[in-house]
Amino acid sequence: GGNNNITIRDIDIVASNVDGGIFDLTNTDKINLDNCSMSVSIKSGIVTSTDVTAAVNGSGNTDVHFNNLSLTATFNANDGECGAVFRYCNVHGDMSKIKVTRASGCDYNVNTFMVCKGRVTNTSLMSDHFILHGTDPFVIDNCYVKCYSITQIEYDNRGSVINSRIYITGKNTIHWALTQIANCQISIPYTKTKILCKAEMFNNNKIENSASNMFVFSQYAIIVGNKSKCTMTSSTPTGAVIANNVVDSYMSSILTGEE
Image (cartoon, rainbow, N blue to C red; front, side, top):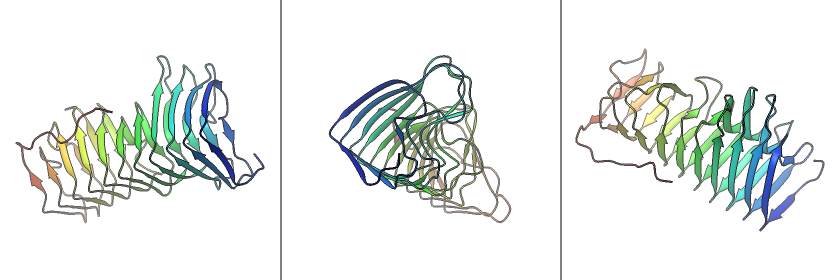
């Protein structure tokens, strides 16, 4: 903290029992992580909502740039609110792989990006929980996304997921609070999954859904040009435009859960 324009390059970081993140970026304007590998685990015990594995900045203005970053984050058994990999940061990422897991006994919510702004491209984002929470705005572009749900809750998240491959592992009611989901390949293998989708634009996606009518769209949404294996929705929300969508029950598999 308190230093500007930091570059950390070509190193491996292994950290366990982390409390408050590897990097506390308070009063720091920019940090570059270039070609680094990180294996991080959060501490066990009673924690609070400040639980972070990688980077945190109280002001929310620090730019975090990462390129060719390989990061594995593990959250251990805790009794807290929400953990995160990056919190209160302005994130710019490319050509990277971030994998987040919750150890057995960890019952609280885990997010990859929490209260962050930014854009991530050409990156694998894998989590057995959530990717975004309280994020405004955030763009995921040309990425592979595998998670329980893209967003943690149905409000207070804005952003876009475009040109990406999405594999959803959630088996219950989950929330997609995004401005735009477009040009994506989406696989939802579980028949009991229900998507509360608040996207204003849900366009030109290819959806391999295992059950019909699993999408519940918000009013005034524009849902056009999508192709789905089963019917996406059985209703038209108030003011919504639902047009030129195609249902093809014989559509071949478009996406697997391979990492």
